[in-house]
Image 1 (cartoon, helix red, strand yellow):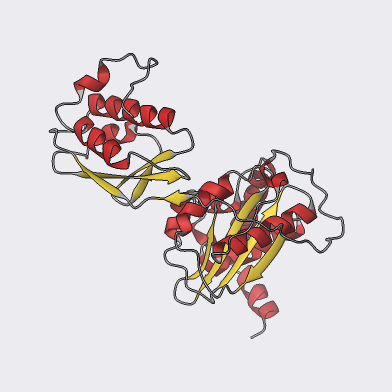
Image 2 (cartoon, one colour):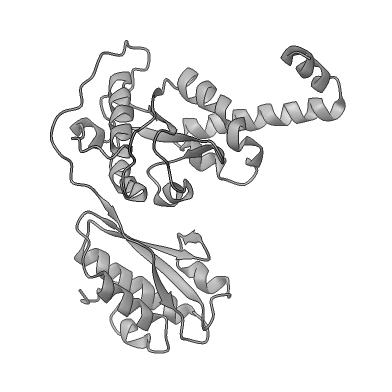
Length: 303
């Protein structure tokens, strides 16, 4: 049976027709979200888009990114892979001029789409193996800059040391002109300082419950760390999920004595991680109150 016959058969039933309509409406919704500046991988990870997982998302990359929004794509089968893939998200997040989407064609897991500017999505990619097909889609800026961004990103994924075009760090880049001809580009020579993503460190909860006092202590400890090392970020994980709002650890009411919260630090000049771990352990215990004795906006001097 041909694809055309399959489509006709599907649309000939009420359930099939309704499913097709829902699919079209969701695709239109994704397109509208992209127009507001959202990233395709972020959208597809939201509730209600489970039917766009795996290869079913492949048409969106062509239809919505390349055809509709003028994204440039560059693909390769890298012979080697960077040692610390999640650390690259720190670098990519600084590329304000472009939006990036990566597609990894894994022979076992199928097509995996991720926003490389988000470390948690890079972690979700698992271990990328050499010679697997990687495609980077870049949009928002001019066609030439987008192509350069995609090429540079793939070089970094492959573990190469290469310079970054300064235009990528400028919000707005060169302005968008997707219909202009793409000229051959060269990646400027020179090494780039690699960003780091530490392993996940575990912090045991020794209080009866990780309550609002512990939450506030953690906020102030992390704020003190970031104030001392502004080029770093602290990411919190619990039960395999990244926690974007520390208050959720208390409102869930499930982080109790004996539980373990994990954290990782990203940045280029990471220091005092063991001290941070020690303070967070105290903040997760009954001895959290010393961290609350300084006004919230006064700042703790811990590092």
